[in-house]
Length: 259
Image 1 (cartoon, rainbow, N blue to C red):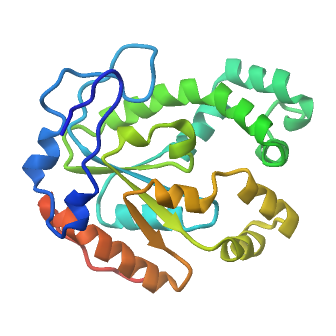
Image 2 (cartoon, helix red, strand yellow; image 1 turned 30 degrees about the horizontal axis):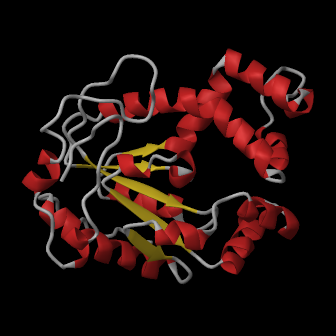
């Protein structure tokens, strides 16, 4: 297996996991220890300390169940870096970036006090893919630096999770050792959005259309975990997928305290 070179990080082959043999902890960690530190996601600023951690990239379309999967990993005492939450922090905490958003999207996405109206901004970008790309282009350079810092702060952990809806869209899948895609049929996801987020069906469909199709994400994943049934069924699928990896890294699966 190749270590990171030229700003990329190689992943193990799928055969490592599908052959039924768990990856040993030593093998997982030596992936990274035969090369000098390099960039993770960004191309600006000082390089962060070497990250000796096996990194799962967790992604999935809106309302597929990615957040539920992230919480399951937290229950297993696995550190989770929430890229979507970090993006919100970056977007709302950087005055220069906010001014760029104002210039690009207008005063209507801010309230009278100058606070960003995220839902109004969402209505614009999720209805027009080009505007969504414009927003991502503004946010990602700053976000990448913060993600590096958060992952570097984890230290020498055996396993961590990067929870990010846009792993493939940002082109950072090769920085993860595995990518897990949470998948649910479109109609199930639309029903969840309408029921839980207060959006109409048309707006829900716009949100789905703004993202990479679920089938495309599934084809590029190491593991696909379906979530169209009950929470208990989904949790069991997560346990089944995680068990060989946890065993190989010397980790123990905790029992579920409830669903």
